Amino acid sequence: MDAASMLIGHEHPWETWNAAMAGQRMHHGWLLAGREGLGKASFALEAAAKLVAEPGVPQPPALHHPDILVLEPLPANDDEAKKRDDGRPYARKRNINVDQIRTMLHRLHTRPTLGARRAVIVDAADHLEKGAVNALLKGLEEPPQGTFFLLVVHQLGRLLPTVRSRCQVLRFRPLDLKEMNDAVSLSAPELDAETRAAAIAVAHGSPGAALTFATQDLGRPLALLRRILHTGDPDLGLRGELGSALGARPDRERLLATIEAARTVLAEEVTQAGADNRLAIIAAHQHLVDLAREVPTHNFDPALLVMEIGGLLARAARTRAGATSR
Image (cartoon, rainbow, N blue to C red; front, side, top):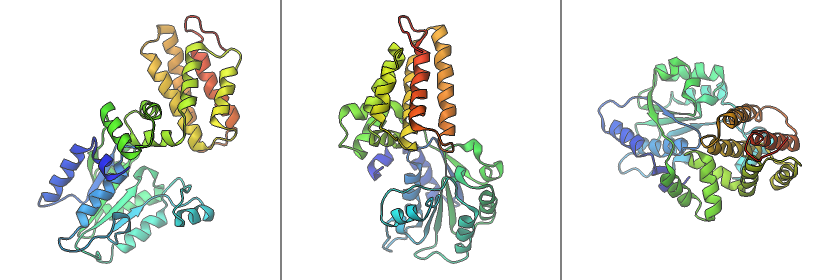
């Protein structure tokens, strides 16, 4: 997300942050809490840059600033590390490990390079290994003077109470429809209106999720999922088309985006469904939630998983008037 889109919908967090910076005793620990894809990490970088800047001292970009330490999951392996070094997209490990935290804490024994303040960004704190959480607590309990922690967190309830109690919580809300349209249009002006509308519908107020969906080119799969739910799929023809639209070997990100699209289709329908059909839709939605939890760690056959996703919507269509499926 670019700098302009990062401001959309985040006026209150910026007001809170700027007021804290203008105060006499700014808190050293901050939790940037909200669903994934709202721009919390981008906010953290911009907020950290404001925090460490010194009047009259030239400042490098936040990602290359010596007084801004960013901790995130490392590349998954050596090949992925090479992609990162080449500036290409790369796969990451699932968690931030304890050695990363210990290395960061060791650096805090030195003075900041360009000014009096240093910022540590953890993206995301709910991806910390257990040992890493315990190590981070030491820094939060006794932070060196001038050190501030910005912990990005997608699920606040997953953090230990001992971490939450040492931080101020800065909450980020989902964007409304107009804000989403503005944010996505700024970040990806090349998208056509149909793709942008589909991405926004699936993203539930998360610009990052909308942009991810748009890059997956899921406009046609989304339309097929809606057809399956509305008409059923007794001869498996629509599920076959869905598989073809997604490709022979869709990767996990594409499969997860498809599951999210299917959940969106069910959510759109549930408020208009009759009582019997509503129960079927809710059951299908819960099954998709379970699948979304399992896909990152299980080795599903992509073709079978796509058939299962389509089958869940086909079965939910069974109780609709005139719809037959299996």
